Image (tube, rainbow, N blue to C red):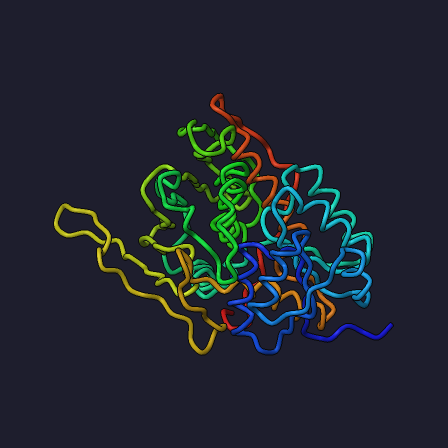
Length: 377
């Protein structure tokens, strides 16, 4: 069988998020989508018609069409992530999975061990940590702009989502926003990674999680899953962070890093081009305060392709797959490694499953900080 095309991916799952990936791939003309599959023929037909792609009629044919060592994007519903990723790894293909990697830690461990045993790359979203805002913030930490970071506050409050008109939300190819999945899986498992990835990339492994979670809105369309979680994260590097996720509190996606010299702040986690600002701490007479305007920090030179805002996000969903393709070509591990994804999963599950009694849980997995992108070094 011939070698795989150097810059191509295949997609399983043609739902809402798949359109966001296709919007992003439009900014990466060097990456081709070779084929797609979805268990719903009508959904796959609409997706393929909109994006002019080739669909196949079975999972067996999908895997059979691929040369060994191809890259598969697993964009299925969260409940199917483990099964689909396992099938692809067993067929000896690299896998990039939508978040979460799995909904149970044992499943995530099994996938990681399977990938390592077969010499394959396994990664999971979100990939915004590879974007300009996250990379700018990480460089500011490395450059000691704010001095030693003593404490981090990170917010992922999405607003009172159950009252939003989500029945009217549709993707480019007409897929409805997956409300049942979003409510059943939970905002923490769905969204905590948007800042956990940044934190782990900058500060390394989380040593201990002290967390609590609850269902503050028990009359949602789908119930039984926490819609609020908060955690204090103790990192091996000595940094302490507090992360909060909810679909109850007013929209707030700030992250603030408090250092000896001042505060580093980003106000939007879902925007690759969000300003990164340094608010210098100073004294005036007997007052201590931080500069309210702040200084915007920028990287020199070009960074990565940007996408236009769609819905609530301005994120390039293709950054992760693109970096993974680079890693495959260069014979190295990808930045969003399987160890990184596994550790992310363990921390996230500890937060979500903490319950109203709370937990203080030592992590059993670990990973190294992420190497900066070449344009951010």
